[in-house]
Amino acid sequence: MSAPVAAPRSAHRRPVALLLSLLMLGGAVAPAGAGTANIAPHKATYKLSLDHARLQSGISDVSGQMSFAFNDACDGWTINQRFQVKFAYSEGEETELVTNYATWEAKDGSAYRFNVRKLVNGEVDEELSGGANLDKAKGGSARYDKPEAKTVALKPGTMFPSAHTLRVLAQVGTDDNLFSVPIFDGAEAEGASDVNTILGKLRPPAPAQIKVKDKELLAAKAWQVSLAFFPTAPGEVLPEYETSMELLENGVMRSMLVDYGDFRVRMELENLEKVSSPAC
Image 1 (cartoon, helix red, strand yellow):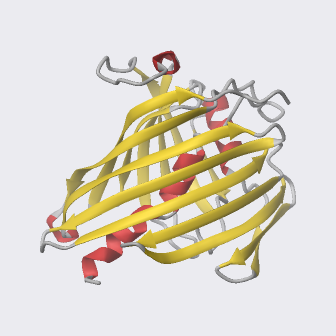
Image 2: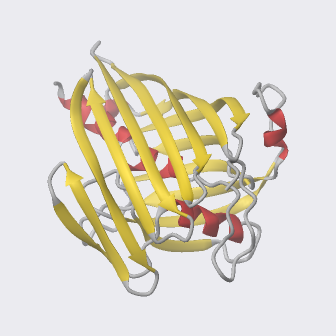
């Protein structure tokens, strides 16, 4: 496999898993001190394309699709997601990356389970599975069953993805528009990653050209949200990648731009439909 594969390979790792987890919420009550989040369970698909690439990246094109299904499981939220992307290089080679990601998160933010399977050109590249527990004041631990059995400590203040999203939705539109917390999503074997969150301005309504099955979901207010993901290695001061998205107040992500430095990938909504909530 040629050298340029190294940069795109990172593109199917933590940012995709975590950002998809921003869509995981369903009819939840936010933690004490926050408002009530009225999140819509839904299925969505997004088209992936190359937004920009520097010459040194070696990338000539990016194409693919991101799809997922979120469900309210009464005691928690579940998500089943598939991320498929093909990178074309200037020298003529292509690499296809596929990530399957399934999680369950307790609605009180105390427990989490994950299964992740990553393939490169049809061959299994990595599998991760396990669970984690958190106490808001004391921290907690993550247990990995794959790729090898081990336990990783999670420091106080760590959040699972749904709890982080609840905080984002509780704070958009307020003066409290910047915060940084460690987030554990199970997408990497190294444990939690520090994520800086910037909450931006209200965005215009959805463009008329967006064609989806349940378009009323797009009528919710949209906010600009930016995230910066930092390496797990100590001493790193620059983010590994940054994202900018339009996040609706009902939990639907309208669009997203992921910036890896040498290239940027755009994700645009293709289809959206409601998912019925169970009688809990």
